[in-house]
Length: 401
Image (cartoon, rainbow, N blue to C red; front, side):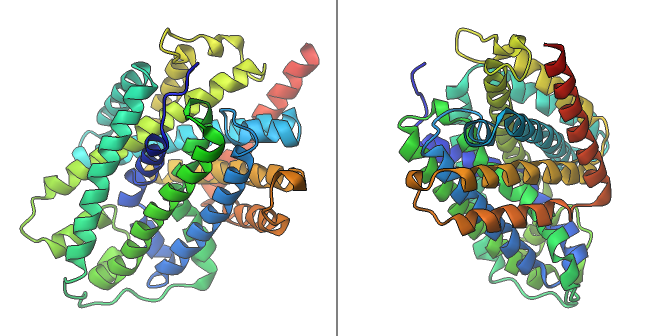
């Protein structure tokens, strides 16, 4: 199949994935844990994301195959590690997609969130079924609109008065838990790696696209991390709409539905890229025999239709939980597990294939595990249970072959 995505397309998908619904919701729960220390949680999450991006880039440069850490673990570790990486990715991103759909629905209509969330999943599924080019175009448009919105908001908010009641100082012990929540919003750059087989000259373009998308989003998050505590103060604690609150303080004459529109557009852009990444990984796993061969069935435009439909159904089932907080915790645990395996694969990569120091892979692995086991207890327990069950299921199926 001919590559159809440029480096700019890949950067747009990464930015759209990271500037999705997560940025519109995570700062309130993080402020509950850290108070005025919130920038430290953002820096820690950004540091872990940077280490992971380095490992992903290191691996993508030598294994230009779709599937991300699933493909890298199979190549440098073994099929079992590869399956665990793929399963972690799918579990994490199914939960993440459900969380994003619920956040979009909350901004659109808090009275009927579940029907709207299900509708968002359906519409984005249909767009993905139309083909990867449509996904790239949608991501470019949505990423551009969202970046423009945040550039304006950050600039205007810088001149807004400080809050009358300061945000209290939280505990340093809560920084890892808060960073795990922030990581939910950061994690989109790996979407580029999972689409490596669709990117022209992927060995050079994929690492470049990951670096650019992570750098752009990192600047936005840090700016918000310093502005939100100063401008909202104690009102930031527990807020489910921190960006809307910041806009209300900075642009008091702005209609509240304006911010809701941007939140919905950003969430839909992220959901669009998530679905594409998940179905691509599922199809690659089916090619390797790790999933049923029916996931290999593709339309004429190359879309793995069975994977697309089944994954969308699973996202819809997760949406029915109605809890964005739970789905964010589950997503963070599974995705951090995925990156742990990616760092391990990068550590096992032969030295002659990369000049990147191995100690960076070790720090990346350790920091991922630290954040993974710091997520809220419900997400941690469900995540560990689901991944363990999937490993036992795979072991049983292998024994039957």
